[in-house]
Length: 569
Ligand SMILES: Cc1ncc(Cn2c(C)c(CCOP(=O)(O)OP(=O)(O)O)sc2=O)c(N)n1
Ligand SMILES: Nc1ncnc2c1ncn2[C@@H]1O[C@H](COP(=O)(O)OP(=O)(O)O)[C@@H](O)[C@H]1O
Ligand SMILES: [Mg+2]
Image (cartoon, rainbow, N blue to C red; front, side):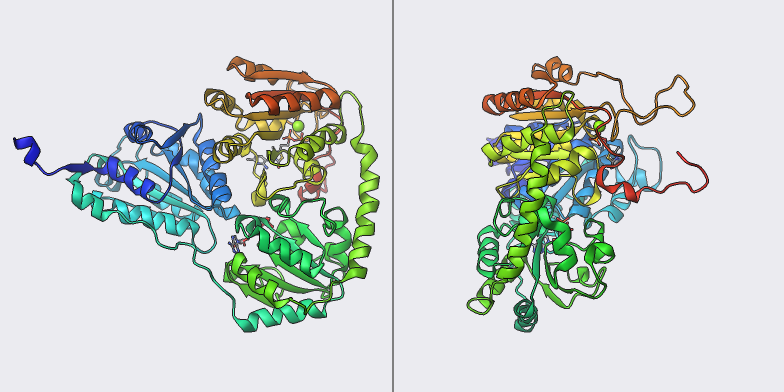
């Protein structure tokens, strides 16, 4: 009959789904609406995991951290204009942190946008996205969907990973084409992250510096965690005997309790080291740009830097031995290069270990504090114990005091388990990261949130309940941004802009959506409530009361704040 003879047809909706699935992308982090609602329904019908959020920024953050965790681009899908704009902060944050992510947004018809005739949600999204991401593409014809998706995937993960924008005008989805032709138009990306080995000359230059060093130091950044070269990295550290530092999201690459860890002796090693090897860590503000009093006498250090991005070398200070390549390949060659040729700096390591033990001993009593209302140290002592007992749990962390103190107090034992505000120090990543951490890892998630930080993405507690994710949110409720004691200098009726409703009960928010809400006022209650949540896997929010006076302005980075010389605040 006529139907049987008619060539099978496909369309833009189907080709987008086929192109993503062909490239092993199965999870979508989205906010539905025109023109992507049917695309999402079809994707779900085809077995893709479609996780629907309450705000695109959180969907985008989820996609970005999924990229960091999996080395595959995390995909966020939004509607046009306002939905696209809401996703941009996450796209820019992914690019800043070198997380591979693709923001796919529906958009308005080109002919109306280009004549500025006032389309529904009209905006030239491609032009607006370009400065905020690694690459940006628009697809106008169904037969180009295969190559367009392939381009976006390769751009996101190749070289320095980052954010990519893919613009899909509404009319593209309903375009029809021959199914056989459509299948042929699809592209499975081949080797998007090729091994990139450094030259022998570059390797020897670095090995010479390491062999001549009296006080060497290795600093691992989140690039080293992302590389997933965990065994090679551990072998290099243990064969070389060199002390190491782990930046926030690299913690757990080696256990923070490792005998060569210099985490608790950070000031000493940055001051005294004579050769510093940076592995997937930029000498940016987080490392004081490699200069100033943090780094001891000017010119007292020789730097080795391993990075896939050639332009990162000499970004802040002279790099004496640049090693351009992917961390897995470079560390493999360095490991071979030190076989039998490097004498472990045992005296230096002993000096570092002594300092570390001294600082750990100084901190220990603070972590036993049973004060109620709690201070940060007492509360974090309880959470430190939970993660020690559950090293495979994911830890999400944001805030100021809540972030800065947790970073040093909660030891990590496994790679890619600590997910925090990263390079940009951006608040609001918490719930998006928590959702993706649960979806991508299947492991229980502990999200340790400042009360202000939580507020940026808190509506997603409904998303967490809807998907019944094993997320335990602990809010350090000190009634404010940094602290809860600020006052309005005029004594007027309005509260200080830095404080919130005193005695607020965030746990009631979780109960509103069927999750478990707990209110705790001491570390023992906190420990028990988190343990119960991690055992049950039930969405849980614990309102942990912290003394409003316990914090400091901006945590550890108060010095970045400009202050008035004419007016004392
Ligand atoms: C998007 C965004 N907005 C504002 C800030 C400024 N900011 C803000 C608003 C912070 C919240 C600190 O309060 P908290 O309650 O989360 O943490 P503590 O009370 O424990 O210090 S930390 C910080 O740098 C930011 N980093 N990112
Ligand atoms: N697979 C990889 N191989 C080499 N370098 C990488 C790889 N993945 C990411 N990088 C690099 O790692 C660095 C990460 O640095 P950064 O985000 O500053 O880490 P941190 O904040 O933890 O110090 C970036 O410069 C990025 O180019
Ligand atoms: Mg606070």
